[in-house]
Length: 293
Image 1 (cartoon, rainbow, N blue to C red):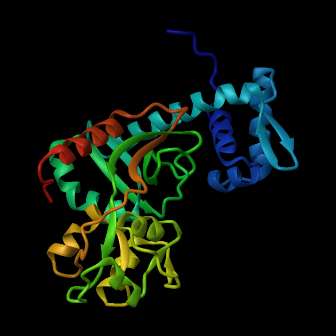
Image 2: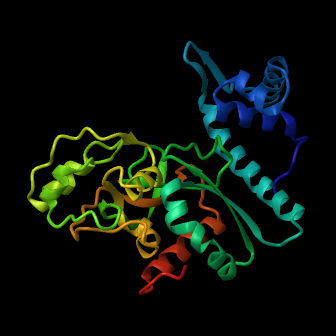
């Protein structure tokens, strides 16, 4: 074991927060101290190490080479300490997994199966928070995040969970028989403008002019569709319960896949054992003929 000099824990924690926040001011807010106190701790650490850790630029703080070498080590170390403190405080030997989940996947797939995950992994406490596909893992204190997309996010390592084929959903008994029937209805839209044109291209039918309202949530699109305010193009696996409950119906078999769900972690971090367990469990469930609710 290497010798441990007097380790300036407060200064190191201050450095990690400042580097993560990219600002002494925001670091002071998170740490609940003054900006002068943050500057003092950083100066103390730089004096002790004999290096400069930050460069101040018009765009904000930038890590020097020394700072870039130190930051991921401190971030991993403090994350490990935080997870262990959670476990000790909970009086358990297990692990706490803090994960951000895009709302559609959380409501449509993961939350209905959360108890099943708990039975399979009683040593892991799963803490979920939802987002709208925009999430900063480190800044929000998460271990990982589930996103929808193509798996290509700068600085992130993405692990495929499942594809999300999209198809129209509507209220029952609208009398839709062929894709051209959709020209008579309002087509609800998400912020991704290519979805309806891509689906119509799969059918060979021309895409009508798109003037329906734009929502940033598939849950909101589904609610409007169930109330007969329009037709929603939704990821089919996420809304099976709505179909079984009679709130929505799928009038056509044609689907188009424009993205998948992915478990993402920053490339500079290692995946925790709990994150790996969740990923493996989700994949195992999806390999079953019918995933249990």
